[in-house]
Image (cartoon, rainbow, N blue to C red; front, side):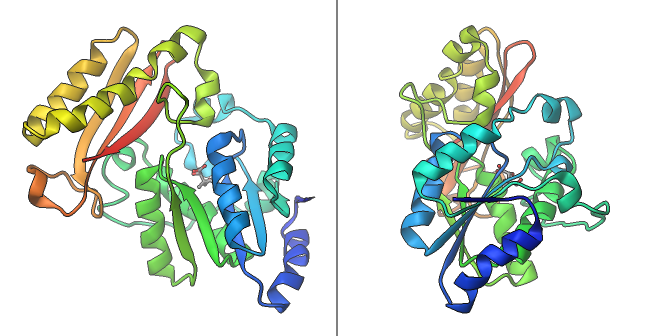
Length: 281
Ligand code: PAF
């Protein structure tokens, strides 16, 4: 696997694949890679001739600077994992390489980027679109792979792809969970041992709510999930929204949309760590 840090070297590495019309898979990441990322990379390796994995902790998508400062950084271990997954290129640029000038572009895809995370993390999806649009322009991937854990992010990126006319396929990949159900996330390493013990209660409540929802309304199901999680000391639900999986707008009855999903964000512990998850109904 080649590790490149500049756009020029990235383009040089991709030149042969492009001239031979070979397919290119892109897996954008912020590093601190885990088995969830590995599943995206393996899928890309299986479906494309060349797989590029970007490792870039993108500052413009962090509205909370302390969140950025404490985000885990594990480049050497990341590269080792990518080798074992069969990726051909790791692109690990500096902030100056990506943003030689401040990025003043503004992306707006309402309602997908305004609800839930968009409402609570102002500028977050704008930053995601800034970096992902640059990566798409430089790599020109055939396919780009994103984890469904960030369900809303995929909806926003789909809108951007259609808006800017990128000719690529977005491939959503299923959430990978720990054996106790906790959705894998780079932020899980920040949990203390006691927080790690209670964190799986989030998915346990979501899972139980699938059964509950069969005989209860949307409103009752929201109350069920929120009260069950808030009953656990050190878990605090920021929001739980049951939405149309396509528009991400709230639904008020189960038959209001062809596909309905419950999206949750929970604060865990005293620092606190923000954990997100979702469930399909
Ligand atoms: O999902 C992430 O890790 C990030 O938001 C992404 C897509 C790599 C952009 O920085």
